[in-house]
Picture 1 (cartoon, rainbow over the protein chains, first blue to last red):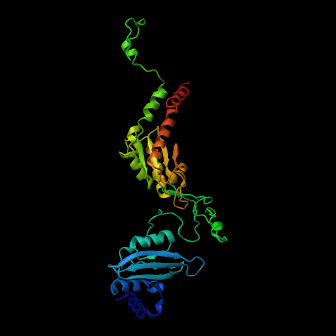
Picture 2 (cartoon, rainbow over the protein chains, first blue to last red; picture 1 turned 180 degrees about the vertical axis):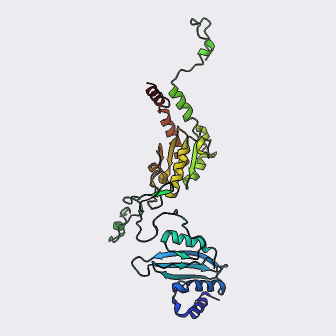
Picture 3 (tube, chains in turn red, purple; picture 1 turned 90 degrees about the horizontal axis):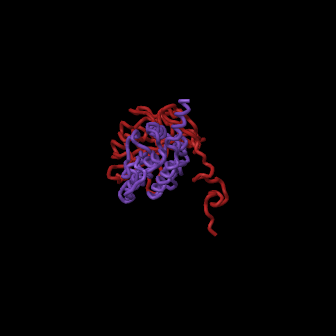
Length: 189
Length: 178
């Protein structure tokens, strides 16, 4: 079965719960409501042959409601099929863990919790993976400044604010042309 | 040089020893010993550590300067070479290694990241190891070539030469006694 056939199968099986299907340059995306996310992924694994979880990531649509969005990249072992599954998550909601479907989801979900602060239910070891336990912020959220925020946990770790002025990657948004947007760019005449 | 003169006037000295005696200050002698036997503690945290390894290997060979004895225990090391990006998660571990090194000790910040945070202006990276421990020599580069590290180590040798290894200790001893 091709991915297109799989998407049709999912649509007929879940009906209204599949909000939208997209195809862009051969990549297929299925957007599903959060309540049916776990069931849909389980069907992908058990009936459609998607044996591999490639990646789990999350998006912060800051200012929108629901705020967050989960993104799952799944594939078959021979890499013949690749499917992307998305589900919106509100700030007070938690996502069902899929570690019971793919064991490899464990660390990906911990990373999503650590960086974006989306909680998971049913995860066997729900703790931070990169930052230390007790770090008070979620650094990949849109309202977290690039420069960082000060924090201090005695005898564990501390953080400070990094000066961004004059540093690399500092651009002026909304400039007329590239030279104005990127002050460090060399203008060749 | 043994004196060859047969009729030595001052018989109080054994002429055979006399020519083999070097007169110097204790400070200078101790500094000379210290600078020619610097035992580095490698603190390899990122790509700079690869250059550090190359520096210790046969092509560049810092044993020419008496620094080949890389000690992986801070208690046996003289100079801490912080080579790489110091994240906040690692920062206190680096400090702990530094605290365990016995005096006298020196620190080299190798490369842009260890010196200033480098290109990592972010929530995760300490903006220079000198915010935590005193640094004697900064080496620029991303990463610096082994020649640059050798240059930095030679700069450190020059610095050690001009230090007061015992003078300050004596002064404090006199103050204590008096």
